Amino acid sequence: MTTQPQDTVSIRSITPEQTYPLRHAVLWPDKPLDYVKVDNDADGYHFGAFRDEDLVAVISLFVDGKESRFRKFAARPDRQRQGIGTLLLNHVMAEAQRVGAMIIWCDARLDAADFYRRFGMEAVSEVFYKGTIPYAKFSRTL
Image 1 (cartoon, rainbow, N blue to C red):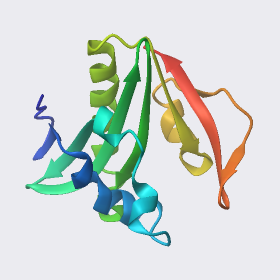
Image 2 (cartoon, one colour; image 1 turned 135 degrees about the horizontal axis):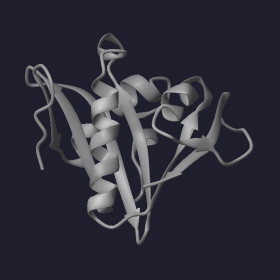
Image 3 (cartoon, rainbow, N blue to C red; image 1 turned 90 degrees about the vertical axis):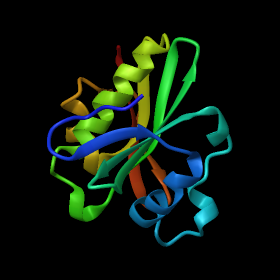
């Protein structure tokens, strides 16, 4: 499935391997590359946002019956706050609905909590840490 939103941004299905460089560079640059791989990556749906054919943001969606989870959502720092992440998350929510999910959730870094709230997501857990980074589980119905 390809979306041609505003400007020259397109959202396309990609392989798990195509997500790894951005996942690594943006989310966990101080960890080895294997740290950003997810055990069930082969079972997920992976999407990339391309601007002028450059991969600038990635997200991975995992669906288990009526529940879906997105993980490893990363945008290049020079492409953040340009609406690309919004386009990508809207695409993933629509895709989750299309395949029958009724709930979507993620482990959100607390410094991104306001972003997720704009999509109707709310914290549904206590704060927890991955390394020194505070997170909470955010969820919403679709």
